[in-house]
Each structure stands twice: as structure tokens, then as C-alpha cells.
Length: 399
Ligand SMILES: [Zn+2]
Image (cartoon, rainbow, N blue to C red):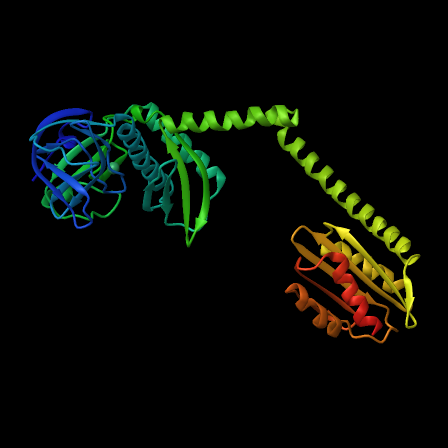
């Protein structure tokens, strides 16, 4: 079995050892086994370490059936000596988040009796799920302050291997998932917990803990938080956004919500003004169109070809005309690059089924459409020009 150096010295970043096996797994991924290792394998909610073995990238570290596999980009051939270094920035970040989680979970449990049922250490943020269905902001603020007091207190974070028999001497925060190789992580007078992960030697190294938000997740409460350098990273990102918004909105941070509200209100007013003006424009267009047109078989036919107009606008213009005039048929076509779209409407007293008209003409442009006998819309490919399509409709109506 590989000796786990991270349990002897969690700050060990480089080491020399021997390679005891080089192999490929069932998915043909190359891996090596080392005599001893400082690479932490994925487990206990903590992601694996990365780094290099003989200058070859270590991509993943997993414990499989007692083998602590270091998955590498390629196998280091002809060598049995291994010079290893781990990516310390990544590992120390994990140590900060992991220890921060112990502190956060212990604070919730000690202060309010809220149990943590799961923990996730994500790439950007960490979460714990609490076994409660609701939480108040004032409770979150209190816990965050308590956690940061524990961090400032720079309490030792100790680890201890114990046997199952010795367990009775401790009150643990959560039930153990193992019965042998029991490792306790202890923050004296604050938290006693079984854990196989990596943590710094004192709470001060966690630096700070910030609760970002909370949400209901299934029947539980999920708390999002970050620790250590991630707090600074988060502050940096948020500060950048605020600075850009300050200049865009011409408002300092404390007036920013007000400024955004004013913009949204203004936008709403503009939107309703546009709607009003569009509706006026359409009435005007409809009026001007009804002055044109030709009389055929006792009806007045009005037709126009537009470029790039929406079917909704065509509908509104057509509706406006036939609602105000008797004996009218309106054909409006919009030429939209490779598509033709159209609306046909008639006054109530005109005896013509527009659905039948549509069905007769639309196949010429591979078109589709529908509606009711007095009002239809449709469209298709530009296999004819808009003028040719219009003429086909006129032909059917006049014959
Ligand atoms: Zn832990």
C-alpha cells in the first residue's frame, strides 16, 4: 500500500520516491503507483491534487481497490525514480475551503442545532446542505461572524488516529462512515469530526469565510460560501462589476439600485410610448392604403408588398382596414430575403373563403398557413417573386 505522506505532513509539496507500477486502466488511461505519495486522491468531498511526476502532468488521483492511482498524461518510461511536486495553490485552496466547511458546519450545529447533511467543494464556490427547511438572514449573519471569530482566534486544527473502542471518549458532530482507520479532525472546544481530508494546522490559515447566498434545495437549505483566497477573488470580481456600473449608471454604489430602478421605469415608459406610436402608425398606414386599390367583381382589392415587416404588423394593418370598410379584400405580402410572408383579410360581408384561396396558391412556394375563412396568414420559400405571388392570388379571386 502506498504511504500517504499528506497525513504525515500536509504542507509537503515535493518529494522523491519510487514508481512501483505503471499500467493502463480499463479505459486505457495511463497511471502509476508510487511507493509513497503527497498527492491527495478525490475523497471525503475534497477534490484530488494535481501536479507533476518527472515533469509529466498528473491529471487525476483516485483510490481504486486499495491502489492509489496517479493518472498521468503519459507513462514515464524507463524510470523507476519519481520526482514529484504537487500544485500547492490548488491544494492549499482545498485545505482552506475544507477547514472552513468544518468551522461553518460546527457553528451552525453548536449555535442553532442545524445539522449538515452534505458538503460540496466546487471549483468556484462551496456548499453545505443543512437539515432544516428555512433560515433567517439574521441567523446567517450571526454564523458568519462566529466563523470569522473562530478563524481570527487561530485555534489549532489537530488530527488524531483512533480505534473504534476509543470513539466513546469523543462526541462527534456527524456519524462516521468508516469503522477502521478512524481519523479525527479536532478544533479544541469547538469541533470533533471524523475526516480523511487535508486541513491547515490552524484556523487562522483559513483567513476568512463569507456566506454568499442560500436557497431551498429539495426539503433542505443549501448555503453557498467561500473561504480564504476565494473571498478576495470574489471581492475583486464584484468590485470590478461595481466600478463598471458606477460609470455606466453614473451613480455610486449606494445609489446604484435607485439608478437601476429609474432606468427600468424609464424603459417601461418608452416601451409603452413605442406601442402607442406603432398603433397610430398602423392606423395611418391602413387609412392611406384604403384610399388605393382596384374594384373587381364588386369588391375592392387592396394589395401591397413590403420588405421585412413582421407578420404581426401585417395582421394589424389588415385588421384595421377590414374592420372599418365594407366590400374589401386586403392582401399584404412581406419580402424577407429568402422567405415570403403574407396576410389576407376580407370584410365580413364579402363572400370568399380565404382558407381555400390560401390552400390553392401556397403550394407554389412550398408554403404553410392557416386561419379562418375571413382572415388567414402564411409563408413559404421565395420560389416566386412577391409580385408573382400576389398576381396568383388576384387571378384566383378574379376567376
Ligand atoms: Zn475535513
